[in-house]
Amino acid sequence: MNKKIEDAVRTILEEIGEDPNREGLIKTPYRVSKMLLTEILYGYNMDADKIINNAIFNENYDEMVVVKDIDFYSLCEHHLIPFFGVAHVAYIPNGKIIGLSKIPRIVEAYTRRLQVQERLTNEIAKILWEKLNPKGVAVIVEAIHLCSVMRGVKKPRSKMITSSLLGAFRDDQRTRMELMIHLQRNFKLIE
Image (cartoon, rainbow, N blue to C red; front, side, top):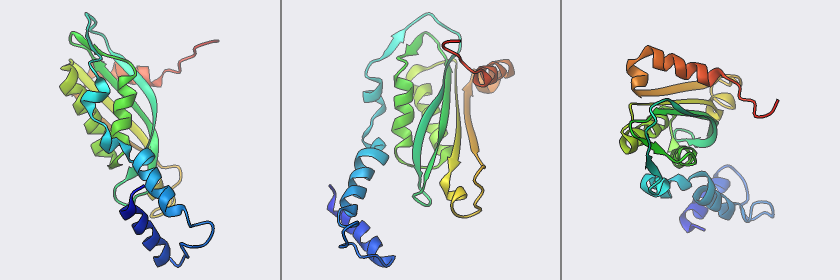
């Protein structure tokens, strides 16, 4: 897949005392390289304009749009250990809306990179702010970081919550409260 990555994995295996030539590890360098490039870190190959792909439409709608519980997985840039959770994304249109599937795809583009949660949250908000010129954007990310669960402080129930509030979500407390009410609701498709 990528010789340099494969060689680096082989070196790590040797340095921790493993034999990279034993049966269970022979293909591990290749598998790790493939996993990093095609699954875990493929966000580096994603471009916001290509993701959006002209799916911004003129629409006379000016109420809140919320896409919540967008599952994600990312990799902490400090320890190369996963963190995962959900992102909630909201915006208030200003004459333009974006195709529904584009919001989770934007989240995916930024989560599939080496990240810190604070920057991730801001990057998602910033791209929507720039592309839609909305009245407001809100991004709230809730995640469990395995670097604090399985190492370090070892607190398995701890979660990190970050937010980026722009425009009306930052300036208007009523707008922010409406968002919080939407996020607390449990949606039932069929009763």
